[in-house]
Length: 91
View 1: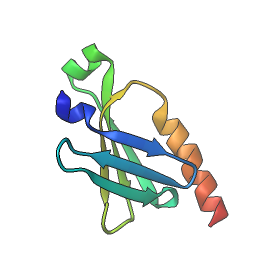
View 2: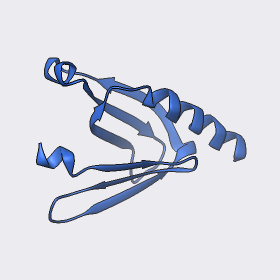
View 3: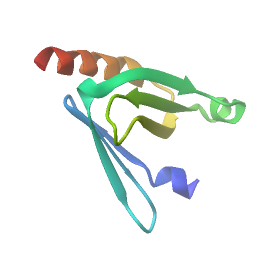
């Protein structure tokens, strides 16, 4: 649980920034227009806790797959999808 709580996600109109780690912090950033596929996974335990895992597949060679662990159930995929479309229009 401490490991999952160490994750921080920042989703802006232009990029997604993920920070993780307890003793050693790692920060990854992916441009929003690179996101291609959205996958939501919920095991039985996650459903009881009203949490989900969100997986994003991207065209970024360094971060081909991004995992959001322990995200509260929400319409986050719709928000990300809208921002991805906006970012692609700008590019």
